[in-house]
Length: 473
Image (cartoon, rainbow, N blue to C red; front, side, top):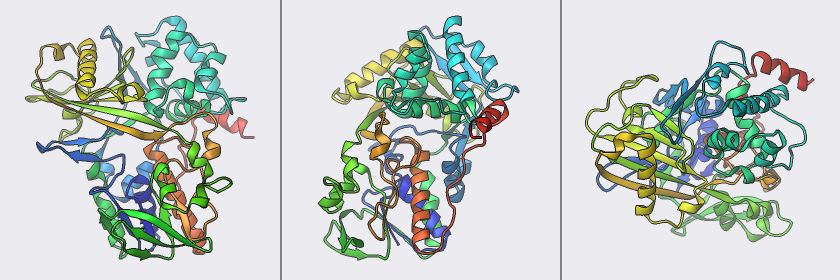
């Protein structure tokens, strides 16, 4: 069994198949595992994530994957979400004892950056989502911005609430985001259950999360090979036969999962698969979105919270990496930083930053930090680096699902994995793991050994559960 690609999709499929008793050979062209969700070592020895990746408690398959590979204890969960606006005003969102979807209402009522009129409009829209069980009617071809206008959201509510959450979650502007994906974020994360919103952040560099994958695969006689790039996937009579490596060698296998980015897959396969009328023709129509990560090391403590979500700024998240990577979990409380402090800023859908120079981006972020973290004005910036992921995710545009292929595209013995496949989720770590699990299920079914691998979503609770059951008959 061959798996091409050592990102989350490839790792998830390989681990699932190894647990099912298959001998898996995984190939990754880079010197590290994790794909777009990994970490690097800088020349001075600092290890940085390419971009801060987080999970939510509603990401059930990602949590299952972390358990399988022994990484679950490296994910620290937080029960409070911290927001700050341009005036430095902080607000916190957290669950109360009330049943879903009312559990966030008390803290939302005290959200200082929104007017009463904005809160009332947002509450009506959220209740419409919950009342429909996460499936409002007539949104199939609608953008999220169109839906927000349809449900009469004021401009300030869109900018200071909906956009803040969704652009960072989906890596796309609201006008280019399918309404269903935006609604799913709120239904699965905030409305369907009381705990789905809890945010999980790795306390170790991302690459460290995948160390256990090798052991799981090796226990079944498999292997993980790094710096082993594939330049061609060969087919014969409509069936997979072998993979040609960058060095010209050829590997044969009974079955293969191609878990590479959709932008790279067509370069590996025969032209007819992606040509007019081919099963992968739609991949040419799936666009990508960029994410920019900015890493800054200050000479002193400048931030107390573990993370902040920013309103009224280009930067969407600030992560207090010094606190998040501390040996002992500190929960949601403040903790002093000893000596300097390392922050990571994340800017999703960062189209206008792609052409900018490193210094321009750092200066922009430094100015935004001064708004919300006054201590940075006097602190010395000891070093900084910028990491641009120009094709970080696929763009969740309205109608994009018609271009996303299933794991089995009709090529015998060849299966696909990747967050861009038909998972029902947008381009997230959860979506990547789901695709890997679905690919593993397809392989096992082809071998006559059907097995369920995919984990169910969190069940809807409280009033949300009642409304969802009523909708589903």
